[in-house]
Each structure stands twice: as C-alpha cells, then as structure tokens.
Length: 441
Image (cartoon, rainbow, N blue to C red):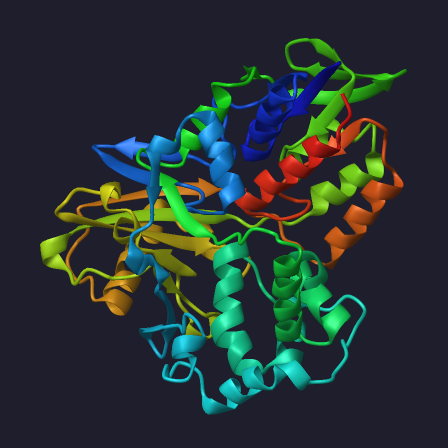
C-alpha cells in the first residue's frame, strides 16, 4: 500500500514519520523549495529569527515523538520568567494574573470582574444564537472587561483573529462542550480534570520549548526520516477505481490512500474537480495577512523586558497586536549584549497595516516599542517577514465546511491540516497521531 501526503508542513511530515514507523510506504509532496510550512527559522549573524511560531507548548507525548526523532538533546526549555504575560492597559503593560494564587492580589481586573469569574460556576444563561461567537459566549459567561482586556488580546495573539467573528464551537470546542454538558466553563474544567485522574490518565503538563537552533530543527528532524519530494506542486487529484491519481507539475503518481495537509487555499486549487463544493468553501476561508517584525536593540540602551511578551487589546488603538520578547524567553536568540523583540502587525483587526511599505511598518513598530516599552534608542537591526495568508479563521462558516467534508467523504482520502481540528503546532501533531492510529495497513 502506498500513501501520498500532500503538503510538507508539520502535519504532513509528522504524519509521514508516524506512518513510516508503522511500516507504511509513503511520500510527501511539497510545492516549495523547503519543507516546514508555517515553521520558518532564519539565522543571520548568529541571531535566530522565528518567522512563524516562536515556541511550542509540549506535553510528554510530544516530547516522546521528539525523542524518537533523536533530537531531544537539541531541545531548549523556555526561561522561567516566560510565565509572565503582559496586557497593555491605558498605554502601559501590566501583568495578567497567572493563576488562582495571585488572582485576588493582582489589580488588573476590577472587583466586578473578579466576582463574575468567581460566580460563573452557578450562572444560568443560554446562547443568544445557535452558532455563537466566542466574544458573545465569554461576555455571556463573564463581562465586557474580561472580553476586551483578556479575550480580545488573547485571540488576536493566538489566532490573529477577532473574537466577535470566531465561532466558539469551532475555535474553542472545550469551552463550548464544558457549558453544554455541565452548564459552566469552570465546572466543566474541574469535572474533566477529575475524570482524567479517575481514569489514571497521565498529567499532561505543558511546557514551552524550542530548539537550540530554532524550530526548524524539528522540521529537519522529521524531513530526514521520510521521503519528501520538494518543488512538486500538485495541480489535480482524480479517483480512478480503488486508487488516486495525483497530477503534479512534473509527473503523475498513483496512490492507494491520500492525506491532504496543505493550506486551505492551496488545497482548494487541486480538489476543485474532485470536490467542487469543498473547494469553493476552502477558497473563501479567510486567512488574514500578517507581518512578523524582528527588532534588535543593545541591552545597554534599553530597560530589558522580563516576561514572555505583551499583547495589545484593540481598545488601546495600537499599530501592532503585540510582541514576544524572544531573547528573554530563549537568550540564545540574540547576542549576549542584545535584546530581540518580535512584533506582530496585521491579523483580522489590523490587516490594513500590512499594506504599508516595509520602511513604514518598521518605523511604526519602532515608535510603538518606544512608547510602550521605553525603547527610545534606535534598533541596531530590523527585519520583516510577511505572510499573505497567515492563520485560517475558525468562523461560523468553517463548521459547515467540516460537516460537508463528512457528508462528501471519499474513502481513503483524508484531510489533516490546520484548517481542521486546531491551528497550533501541537494540535497538528495530535491530529496526525489520531489519524495514523485510525488507519489500517
């Protein structure tokens, strides 16, 4: 049995590696010159720039995969200070409460919001619509302040999205199911934790990791273990009897099973003959533009930020959605006498900012860092990486897409990408594990 995997990002490579471990014959088809998808690391003058994810929240099962790849010794755990998250409020960064231990002593939220959080367990209310937005869901369970100064920046940072446009059922299914089953988010979390303990399930405590030479180490480790055909663009896919014919810009290949892991818009192009309705929906799925702006400063010129990073609520009317203080999390990202800050320009709420010239974007980022972090000296270096289509938005429309995929399912054709089942790298790894476990040799 031969399996074709379309797309050489984290989903495609992980799937291929897991299949190979089980003895399957498979090949990854990747249109680009390099594999990796959204994971792109640049190393310039001994500085390490991540143009996609900056770190990974990994559990023991993920670490086991890394161990099987033989790259555990390359892992780099985030510095202890990375636990501090900051939110911009009234022009200044303030620490967000990190847990129950400092929830009451921290003054970030008003007592009214604290009361709403403490009493959510008993609150009885129902959705205003069948497909409720994430914003409406959290507002109904809590209040405006929590939506505007916790949810909004969080969603902007994770999804590059707008909580008012994301469907809670799609974007955060665990929250949706907790309320549906238990009538409360907090009660659902407690019950879920209790059930896992009763089942004897191992505690999957997540830690932030990268690699000494950046996240591309993960991609290189996977790529070295599987067959990858680079510069191979899939242009069409046809079902012929019990097999699939994949037509590329180079040749035609036959497979018994096909696993599609490519982006929504790429996938839409080559399935338009096989699944025209699905193709149209994928083509219409919005993925906003995003510019990643790396700024390097001399330590002596600034007051070094301590923490993971800062997020900017839309109400603060900032140019960026926030920044990650990269060299604070992983000191080897820049020189010993330098600080590297990675800022994010664009997303759903600030898409128009990506239309400016590179010089204008750099200038605006520099001015904002001066205003919010007191970085008043000139950066010694700035670099921009632009994603024309960044993160797929889990809006109400995507729920119909998922339903239609099941309704129009073709035997032995599988879809395993970041537009289905979660956008994060750990989501993609977990989904790949589930898919491979479900396949019969």
